[in-house]
Length: 179
Image (cartoon, rainbow, N blue to C red; front, side, top):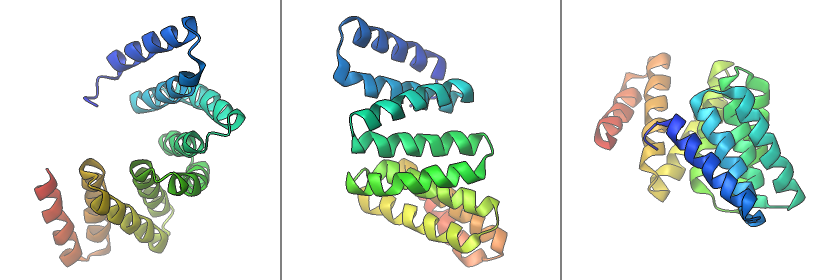
């Protein structure tokens, strides 16, 4: 959470080692998902894909709906960082029904904001605004202040880009409040 990914990855590998040596199979999916997410956040896309693919295979094998949604969202983040808009949109979109069914509001807010960003990149602004608003409402309703801040920053820039100073100002004020 503090951005020290090198240290976080070290701890995640230690946890994974304990899971392996103690054969705590029920925690393996957590470990793989965490490692994939940490490598994505650290910018190591090849390892992020590798661990996320392993987590995805295990989540499908176990039919773990919660993890299927999380892992698809993580793939969206990975492909977003890889500048592969098509696969990012596909994975974020596929994640949504799983995340909705498990009420994972934080991951759902992340996926919808991810979609908003991707649609903005390809100039589908109506879709971008739709998903940004969905993310904003989820955050506001569920007290996800860090994700609400990210969404408000996006909406501020979105409205600035459209020349809508009134709405840009409204979200900029909220950004200041959230900070």
